[in-house]
Image (cartoon, rainbow, N blue to C red):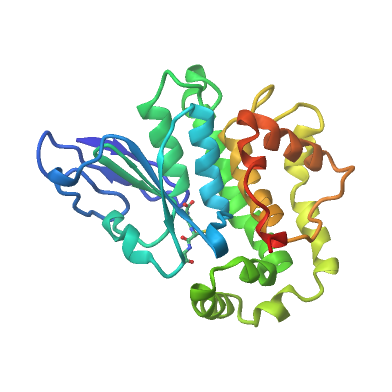
Length: 274
Ligand SMILES: N[C@@H](CCC(=O)N[C@@H](CS)C(=O)NCC(=O)O)C(=O)O
């Protein structure tokens, strides 16, 4: 039995790996028949219009895989294709299948990659960083999920809608308007006045990256990829300027874009695609 007790929500993620038989359990237990096991890594990632991949959580995982130097097969999942990840026992992406193990939740995926590939570059500041490094990354993960994402959504959500696949737009509009209690357009209205609250919320990160290249120090770590995912989501789906070009956050973001062979720069900008 293997126990991975970590997730952005603080809920333990139990992975049960027996010699034979059932091997998959994430937040809720699900089965993955032995005869269907895969040996390679497969990433299930959100896709929008024309296969655009802009999920902030998907980007956390994509950068973590690049950081570890791990190749993977890709399965694209539209908003209304939840049956594709039903085997994981929940409905959200990203989901990572690594041999016999299925992991959902981007932070749990990062922990899995760190534990399963200890000899590849560390996501949490090195083996010696131990629980401290992981704890720091989890704190940033919680900060971005709870404080940053909610401030970005009203700046770009109507633009994101334009990048959603046509077949999923009714679902996206209905689910988001219910969540926000307003139409997408009303929720995004007046964003020029709202953007300062977002910029101010980044002050704790700004104080770090004005003095050193990355949150992780001289090279990026998972903490960098967590915030990066949110800014990359906006970069790919909207032309609205989230941070000013003289902001240290802007320079940091450009450095993360350049990291890992600039893999994140290769993604087409959905907002300006034909
Ligand atoms: N805590 C999760 C959140 C994952 C999440 O919210 N994923 C979004 C994609 S950005 C999703 O699957 N949304 C599907 C939906 O809204 O129906 C993680 O870190 O992976």
